[in-house]
Image (cartoon, rainbow, N blue to C red; front, side):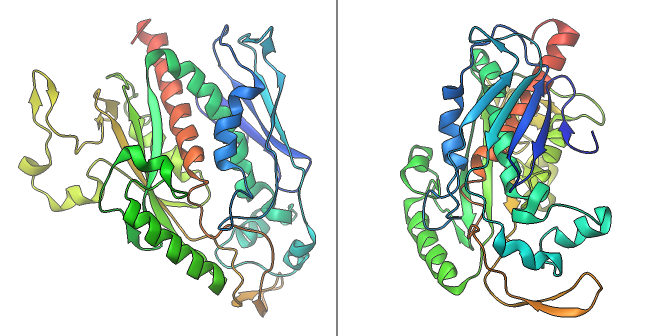
Length: 353
């Protein structure tokens, strides 16, 4: 499907553009007899929805998920599930400048070079709007994970250079940045407010965890669990880096420091991030994701036009100051999709996990 699909057994294919009629996803490989309704999507879609506060795009979308196929009498049938989210507040006039000019840091230039003709309104196919479909697919994946007790959640560890120094996970939902450190959260608010006044944007780092994941998920050698998780995360537009467990810090340690001792009760530490040899080891899977600043900003920048001539661009439109925290449910969805895919692969091979 020319790069629009992801997964092997549990497979998703997204469709739609930012300012088109809507965005959606076809979920194939979902087992039958799983209870599902439009209301199940509301909590995660609300977390990703635009227009929730002053730090994010004022675009107002209800993001109601319509189930168009794959459901009968409230239960999945095993047939492909089609989910659709209508666009109701698209404003295209500010994007007419992209007929001529490219936004630095955005995909306008590369889409032009690849396709020549493409929908650039609101970012079109390369807009973060596409991630609404991923979140919807992640809800279906989460339904499959529920009976296994597998939980996927995320939180902000850094935003605009402000790093969390304490990690009380009970505080994640007590501030708008989903930060486990209340002091850092207040500092994040201050730097976001300042950056918004300047017309600029910020990047950050998010940590995603999957708990109660059974040991044995992952396929050698090219479909390693961490390899698929990394690809899933890197497929999200703003992501520029991924690490697991100790990550890059492991490069500074000795083997005796980095190895997780094994005891009769399990691993004494988790510098491996829950994955060894590309296969889950039963510990919590821990992945950190680096997000670049949003490329659409209000400041004047150097660029070129479609003929390659030097130009200036000062873009006006509706966009976020940072991908955080709206990206959190997107990353959680991608992790759920990968784990479900590997869980179903393991059940196909072994009959159970």
